[in-house]
Length: 206
Image 1 (cartoon, rainbow, N blue to C red):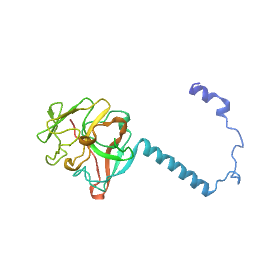
Image 2: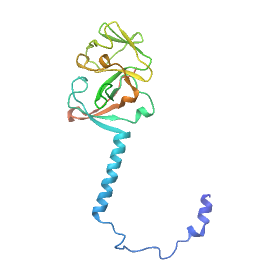
Image 3: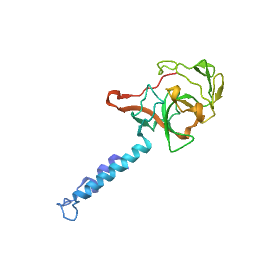
Image 4: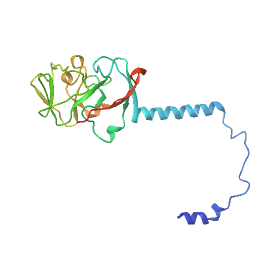
């Protein structure tokens, strides 16, 4: 039905008389009921926000120093990776492959199909040195299990190789291997505590 047809409909163009009704005691809602409704709606919206859009996390440990410190509070974007894959250099929160109830914060170094090599205290991706502008100094330590100096690892499809920024004190893919895409919660986009360190989190461009 077109807009013109709607405007010509006598049932719509002519308002019915006496449709207004005054307040009735049976229609009134108590203040407690309205508060309960508001609280329920706020709870539902909060759950949707946390599960599908953004989630707060508390950083524990020193594995991401100097960029993230023990006690920092961050926001994790859970929406972006529904539309595109994770990118190299992004800081992510994910479930530990060994203890799924534990969540880690690390940086993506190797993408699916990449060959990652540690050589001469530097990282090489597919034979090319990875320039890590987010590190103030060379601080790479070889992992004793999954990858050692002059060794390489090829990242399987659907997986990622991650490292902590504090290479000398980080439990990461050098120890437990690559992580699955399905274990990634999201990417870190904002630090909101401490107040002196409030900032948006940007990722390097490659």
